[in-house]
Length: 353
Ligand SMILES: Cc1cc2nc3c(=O)[nH]c(=O)nc-3n(C[C@H](O)[C@H](O)[C@H](O)COP(=O)(O)OP(=O)(O)OC[C@H]3O[C@@H](n4cnc5c(N)ncnc54)[C@H](O)[C@@H]3O)c2cc1C
Image (cartoon, rainbow, N blue to C red; front, side, top):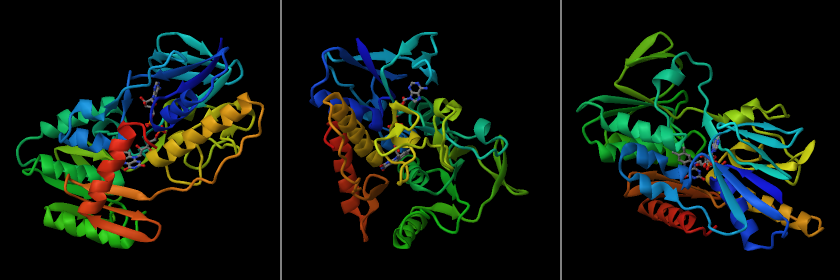
């Protein structure tokens, strides 16, 4: 049997699998999905799992069951593009005819000493579980520093306030305002929500070093019981090791069909792919779906035709009752974007694109 191997069953990898399973798969071909977990972990909800406002089960989605797809569970350790093989942690090797790399991302610590060892992470489900334990074990009225005021930093701070009203929560950001990639109006709304909910915002922080219980803003110490890292991401370690052309963020450069130009049998999806958009679940889902369209066209001997990717906008939450978002030039604040975000989550749990 020929193998279409998909590495990673997250937003990108599952979009490829689901779309392929909706159509015809050649009778001599099987899809092999590889992941270290036997279910999808909904990464967009990891902030709530870390804060303790939802359960582990709430962020898991079962993989599709179909005789045309098989599963291999374990950690991918490397890809040999020349011999077309994937190596796994248990010394197993998987050969492929076609490969899709959809392994998501990991923290980027920008070479800051101690950042890797002394900060909690929400970039994998395993690490988020550890972060949940650390955050919920902080002593009463303890101090939590969240490094990075982007979407995930803002969401975890707000959710933690809901979970632990006693804690002193602080967001440290290197820019002048939180959510610097969002319209200023949203940033202002979020800042006032934080003032109202007693979350401190510290801007222009330049983290130079982290030690147990202390973050250094250049020379100035900022003390705390826990530091959570939300200040940068990069593609997974397997992609970091892959010797192919990449963009400045370390994402793999691709042709118009999302193939690695010198290895057209290899597709790359989601956070590992160099796209014209910032990494997001939405992009990973749409692009994964398009990869499946390309593969189906090739299997049918046709030239792939892809629509331009159009995104629907961005939504963020501030606890369970408030949120923010923008679509095109319109911004939304309060309860409506929070309800919309719940709708998006429901759709992704039930495989509606
Ligand atoms: C707190 C938070 C909030 C977010 N909120 C939003 C949001 O509101 N909207 C939005 O669009 N995006 C959001 N994002 C971003 C979004 O989650 C990612 O961009 C998206 O998950 C990327 O999809 P992906 O398929 O590339 O990777 P993932 O969905 O992360 O999937 C990668 C898969 O690969 C597996 N894997 C990784 N390495 C290995 C390995 N070595 N071996 C085996 N398996 C492996 C993982 O287990 C995982 O199943 C958020 C991210 C975070 C952290």
